[in-house]
Amino acid sequence: MQSRLLKIGCVGAGFVARFQTTAMKQVRGIELAGVTALQGAAELAAYAGRIGVGNPDVFHTVAEMAKHVDCIAIFAPNYVRVPIMEEIAAAVRAGAELKGVVCEKPLGRNVAEARRLVDLAGSADLRTAYFENQIFMKPIRSQLAQLEPVQMKMGPLSLVRSAEEHGGPHEGWFWDPVRQGGGVLCDMGCHSIAVGWYALTPAGKGISFLQPLSVNAEIALLKWGQQFWRDKLLRERGVDYGETPAEDFATGMITFVNPETGQKVKAQFTNSWMFEKQGLRLFMDGMGPGYAFEVNTLISPLSVFIGDVAAEKLKDAESALEKATASRGLLAVQYNEADLYGYTDENADALQAFTEGKHGMLPWSYGLEITKLVMAAYMSAERKRAIDLTDPLVRQELETYTPLVQQGRGSEILL
Image (cartoon, rainbow, N blue to C red):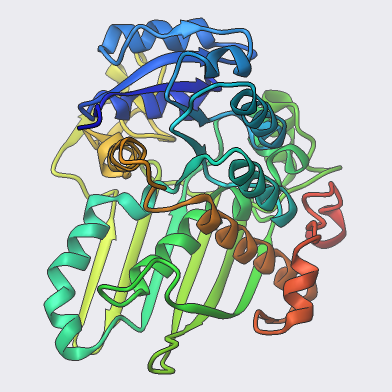
């Protein structure tokens, strides 16, 4: 019987890495055994030790860490993921015995990068897990299980709407369209597109069963292009949206077809960096013939009230909720965000898959398909028309397509 202990080596030590470390605490059989990062590695290692996730060593290189762990998780910024994966593949060829490799969404800034990661993993015969946490959210999983008998009688969902919105990213590179890969569509559209596709999929079918037919999308710069907010962004994040802007709002519709029945279904996505309520909101709902579901993460069994006097003593608005924009008033509090948002269960899935010698439920090939849909959405927004994904010429063009926003030319379509 294979050991269920999975020793993870983490590349990156920023917000995502810390959040994932918090999630690991809730999964028996996972240990954070190593960290390598340009900065913050020692702090993340110390945090892991304090919460009982392990006592990770700090390594200077990915290659060195690969010799001491079972799995490497790429939680580093988007613009360095290809060279990191090249190091991992080289380490395996040099003798590192890895069971698998994880990559946080998005797999790549564009299709070419995502395909490069898939090919590198294949060349090293590595099992993969694409970390798209929203598919693993318990509310999403629970509604699908609860509605499965209804689906079998009445038919599958025909419309799903998914939104992720907050006031903006944590770190400067997230705001930089060249390094990040775009704006809110690249950052969060991948979440909403993936969960829409997943929730529409008929019970018992694989994650890519429904076939994408077309994408119709719009992007805009609504809040962070205004002078006051542009000045704030330049001052606090070092990014000039007067020169190289990214979109802070994106919305669109993807049409899928059931290849067995010919039924067309639709997934609508909406994402913004201009949400001014309690904090991060994930909202999903879906309609089928005679039934529906709804998920709203701002509805919590716990709420607190903080008055003005008490609020003056608080420094961190996020003590209430991730990306909270207020530290006073009536606040919704999610007491276990890592579990609510699906991080715990995606780690549990990687543990089971890699110890059994399998790919995760979401392999990197799936992450590649999500990247294609995100790029098709950018293409649609640029060209102001629906993109036909059944056209072989369009599919070929997407392989080398780089959105204007990602090129640093967002001013041509946003300003």
